Length: 104
Image (cartoon, rainbow, N blue to C red):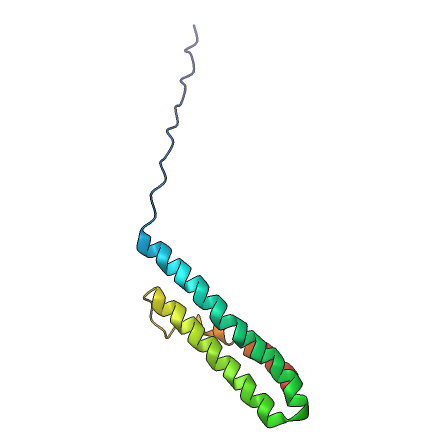
């Protein structure tokens, strides 16, 4: 006589409630990302058109976009209590690096 197969009963895991500080960090970083990335990208793209007429002003706007991008990423790292000197800072320079090809 063959033994009857045992039924494996899987218990559902109850999801852990998320800590309120974690939610606040994510919301604040999403807001900072939007508030910082929009001007950085806008200045970077706008600097292409300005550099065609006045090269000095175009490069100035281009540098400002890089500074705003770096400050945005550094602020997000500070919200998550990470060191601001991180390889993630290169992400803040992405719009500046892409548009630099068109300016120079």
